[in-house]
Image (tube, rainbow, N blue to C red; front, side):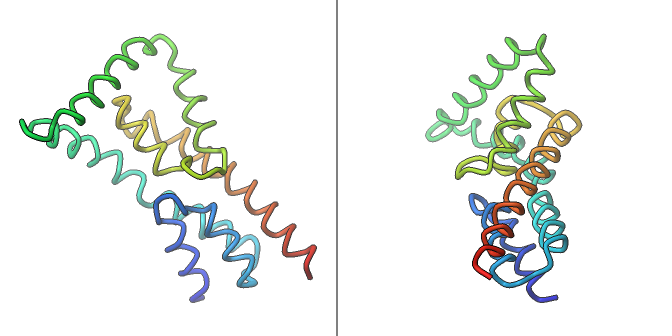
Length: 153
């Protein structure tokens, strides 16, 4: 049970996420399905909070005269991108999904949530592609991690 909590905790950490939690679970000998479930759940727990409150924090930081310029620039870029892509809602969905699904450093649910914030996407429009992307990344990492462990056993 404690190993499941480790996996859950590791998968909530930015950058590491389930890309590090699933191999850790495999190395600890955790059941594949339990490891997958804990990693996916742990990876998704912070996302709604990031999307709901991250935009508010970004807008709040943009209000400051002295150090708000980079935050205003981020908001401006996001608004311009959304204006161009508003007609291509499907492209937003598939682009965000693909970005989250690729299990490489710098991609994942945290970065996907930050992209959603920058593009001004609300929770309803951003959660489905992030969830599906996390599931795909979880399957890929589970197959790789448990395959490597099986080879060495």
